[in-house]
Length: 539
View 1 (cartoon, rainbow, N blue to C red):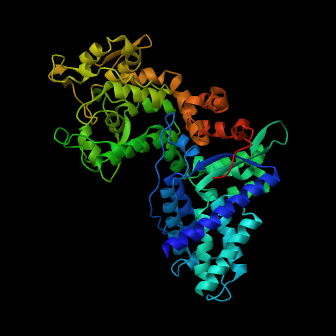
View 2: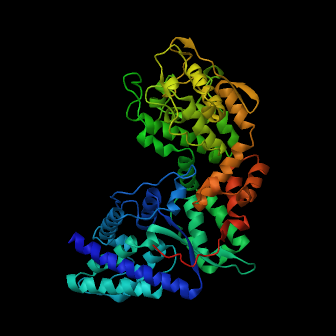
View 3: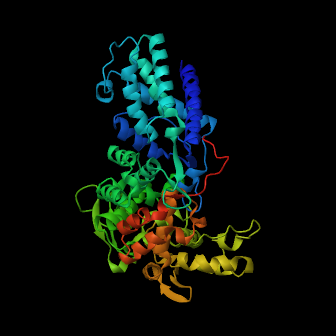
């Protein structure tokens, strides 16, 4: 029966995709972008459309980090046959729940004339309603007709109106029109070139700010054309930004920018670091997100404070590594480290120190490479295959500290140029071990945390934090990453001119995230689209 369901759905979905493409071509509009929904976007969309008590159970295919962001891969990855089967099963499961006796009173907006026979009128009402929400635009006449026809056929064969409706809804959930954020370009009305149509604008705004599908008001703004006017756009942007749901959207962004998803593969040597227990990785990730959002949204503070502040939020698990007595109530509590701890914002949080270290020891090079890419948008070239790392890895030799081993390794001219750019950052963080705990010695030797970068000398994490705080590269990198994230682009290939409006607003505001966000999305260039390719087809 399951195979039959998938085959029926697949045939209707394929037909619907062809019809959608034909309708676009006839209207003069063109598809200029396709972005596969992330797992969070999928789950959030289902929860907002059908309710949080609808279970989403299935396997999602992972993204790939491109130019520092997994968001960039959503614009280039398709769905494998195994992934399509998984989405088909999820679609049928979700549709079955939505039309079940348990949920139909809440989710089905009409009563059929008979529960044992087809009812085209009721099916049309329900499928058009959920079609708008799932496709993020109204269904075309043919898209609606084909699904009502399927619902009718299946209701007749099963003798159950809701069984037929289940099939109709499942084809919506399985369709590329839902699984991909399809961006449509139309000729610009007042200038040469192309711009995104109103529904594509609504989706881009909603997934950026709330990490979910557009709500009813945003879709209505797109339908009326209000969203294409400067005043209408500003009205919706202000509304989206005023909502507590902005935190959800920015959580998704910072998780991507700070590479926090890599915690899934982080491991530590439990023999040497027994404090790194099961819940530690999740707690470290949560600390970074909570403290970042506290600065960026709750306090609306200067984003550069993330590099120098000694304030954070911790729980019991983290307190054990930080050496902080856990004497406060509640799961999470604010904490301010003393100056003697050498802590400096993100740079010395457990997450950033642990993610970019080896299982049993720290790694100045990994930390330096990561900080350069994440905070300064300066990727490090991949080392040649024939590089000899024996000097660095010889922890039992005469060179007791990693600084000594790195200096010997960097004596090779092939390695020197890259190591000179990344090692000073990592060496200034050597006062912290592989799980982020404070230390003063390595193999019995005092650790030297002095460093020189770009002709400027500094000492330890605090010195590094101040160095980065004063660098114009950090705010520019935040603006670049946010713009690239919003558009599904490789940040390394984005020209500065593309996000100039947002960056200028960011600078004028004293580096407030809200100003950057609004400056980016209200810039007239934000919804510009490249000329459609003649051979661009739907998935």
